Length: 146
Image (cartoon, rainbow, N blue to C red; front, side, top):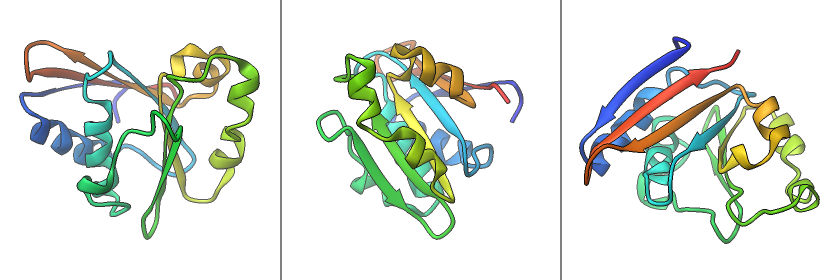
């Protein structure tokens, strides 16, 4: 994918479709940070990514706010959807075993609130930012770091 790719969505269904589109640029071994306010549509976008990789139907993808990590296994790609919103310290972060998840063959880590931790930002391969531009409208920007 280009260093900067800007896409637009006007509904949750379009955000899911953008997630499908992004699968052509994501590959095993990557860790990507998802930025956006609460309710911006990060999990909705991941519904499309998971479905695009045949890892999970969109209705099975939910926010890992309380469980912290959800795993979706597809035939070629395993998606680890990680939410660091409730993680406050480096010690808590270490208990998640993010390095182990990243080392798993065929995995892609999609990390919500990863920007809270410098080490996650430094190790990430890119980021997807979602900004509300209207009631249902979103600007979605993918930036590759590698």
